[in-house]
Length: 276
Image 1 (cartoon, rainbow, N blue to C red):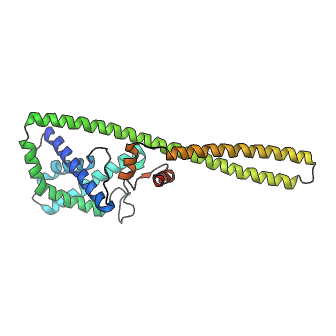
Image 2: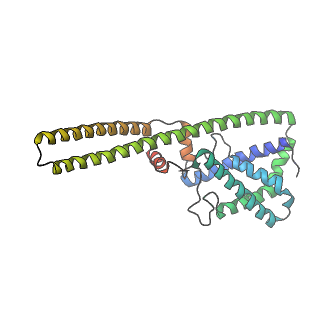
């Protein structure tokens, strides 16, 4: 089925929206609440748009052979999902979904169960649903359709830019939290060493003059109090950063991807998610 660039963009937008509807419905079924699923803030899941568009463009010649269509859809869309997950993790240092708990998964990006669902879904779309969608696109007057498409693409571009900025802020907050937590741990270890040093000095210099013991003990005490004060300050900063109100976009990301993992700050991410 040869399609024009205009039709390809419409196919991408329509199925990205329908994919978002599927994701929201699935999340509502599991959690009994509305969750704005998807990478973007708006009602689009680009991976669905890319997947169906690729199937329509590449696999349409196989539409008469159901088994071959299913098999090729299984492989093609799984490859797109794998590549999407891989690139998102490399670009933003977070793993947005994770199938590691499912059998025969590949790097946590794809697993047989969802790949089979992808294959079955693509067969249904290409054989039953897409002819209706494509007919609707062809019936849409070209000029109004082009204007609407341009507006939708502009909204999509703005949403993408906002989402990327939000993720960068999200990662920066994680980095700061992890950095402060690391400093607190170092100071806590130094406090323990400080106490150990004080006890050691008292034992080793028990027979020396009281003045020398007192001077050394005072030095240790002052160092201890300074480090304790610094730890208290950092703990307050950490708690404030942890509790500080976060943007709508950050909250949405945490709700949309409950299994998200951070490559560098996983422990901090878990604490932050549990706090919210």
